[in-house]
Amino acid sequence: MSFSIENIRNFCIIAHIDHGKSTLADRLLEMTGTVTDRDLQEQILDDMDLERERGITIKSHAIQMEYERDGKKYILNLIDTPGHVDFSYEVSRSIAACEGALLIVDATQGIQAQTISNMYLALENDLEVIPVMNKMDLDAAMPEEVSDQIVDLIGCNADDIVIASGKTGYGVDVILDSIIDLIPPPKGDAEKPLEALIFDSVYNSYRGIFAYFKILNGTIHPREHVKFMATGHKYHADEIGVLKMKPEPRKQLSAGDVGYIISGIKNSAEVKVGDTITHVENPCEKAIEGFKDVKPMVFAGIYPVDADDYEELRFSMEKLQLNDASLTYEPESSAALGFGFRCGFLGLLHMEIIQERLDREFDMNVITTVPNVSFIVHKTKGEVAEVHNPSGLPEVTQIDFIEEPYIRAQVISKSEYVGSIMKLCIDKRGTLKNQVYLTSDRVELTFEMPLAEIVFDFYDKLKSISKGYASFDYYQTGFQKANLVRLDILLNGEMVDALSTLIHRDNAYSFGRRICEKLKELIPRQQFDIAIQAAIGAKVISRETVKALRKDVTAKCYGGDITRKRKLLEKQKKGKKKMRQVGNVEVPQTAFLAVLKLD
Image 1 (tube, helix red, strand yellow):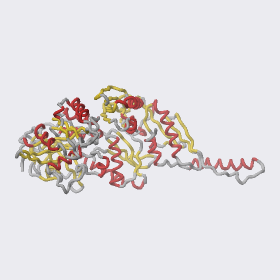
Image 2 (spheres, rainbow, N blue to C red):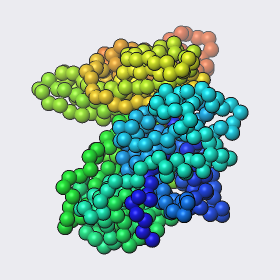
Image 3 (cartoon, rainbow, N blue to C red):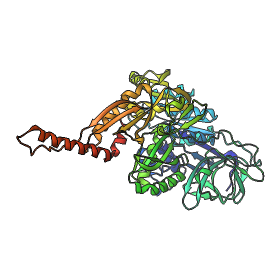
């Protein structure tokens, strides 16, 4: 059954985390009859357990609905987007595949940071934005205040805002009518050469990778020879189809359609989000703009707790990468932890999710080292190197200067917390760029700060000082020169490479002292003294000692000459010294975690 391009509507939903977009999507699917009552469950588009537990969308989903109004049938393609800041590139490609967006704002919480940043993405792509005020069934809803915020943000009239509740289904029919009336049909010509934008891909263990695309121009049939422009690979389209609750094959898809292609690809690196699909025989002139390789921002080492599980960990990482192409990893070894992998993540949430998935889906018990970001090192001889790991830093004498990545951070909070949020950001070497009052008691603060400073515990601290109210969003702005030093931790003179960090010179002394104190509590006592030192190069800046367990060897000497006691103590001292040379110190897993939670 083919539809004319006039009756197709492609839209996405943009919202901050937990403003109810997955629940609203459920109601839309229910109302259009896309999902039967028997299959209906809460947050039906979030199919990972992790997504349901945390109430976040990790992997975006697309789904096609059919809706009949006034005797005309319409096709509505919902291209879902992940809500979290780490996945902003995926969001931008999903938005580029749409003509309109539902902007959902929680009536109890008002506008928050990611709502604004995704909103700007939508406006940059010239989308028609339909404002929706959700959760109107709750007693805590503040319709007047929130509607003023929405009017300020997008400059619409208060009457244009759709009042709805995803839980009860109130207002969903109005949303469907607005989608049909306000969102324009896709532009495109089915007769032109094929030009399709890949906005997502999922891995299926039987059939390889499904690439999800939106056709801008042209037509595609099964078994045609197609080319992916960014990678240059060529494939035969084994199957094409549309995305209902389950993929449904079709004989042809043309301009304006959203669908999937299966071409037997087994390697996720070959399908890149933002790439363009075209025909080999009659290609389009140039690729669709906006494609970029996703670059990891945060790096951490992942090691198996038991060294024998290394191969199994590698197998798990390969499997995970098929589902999540933005994860990068390479093997590395550490003197303290043995063999493992250096992994690159899009951000902190991404890192947490990968750890959680390794634990749940593959039952892997892993140690994660301190996360850090990538630095650009300019050497004295004029060479430039990118360093992802503090232990990969060249000698101090060879370094001319180091540049670190900077971000622009937007924090939206209640105005009573402004002072403590400013103090937090300035302690983290941030500079305040702008401060705007959105309403009388909500303020938006814009800071410029180093990415390395938010990698540790910034988000937790922000949430606790603002009692959970502040929302936070950031994007990278480039690199700036920084006064950084490498802080090493030594145990009995041996360096523990997994605890090395690159840190700003001004913070190094206090950080080193805190680490030494923390390790003193966590490292179990041995038969000999353990010296814990923090050092910058050859200069030790802090030291703590874990005292030896001591046996009272003089107990059997009562009375008599003092030299008898001294002889026994000397003998014990020699034994301790010898033991210290051969004894090695085990660093418990809790010590690596403690460094992350230093306070």
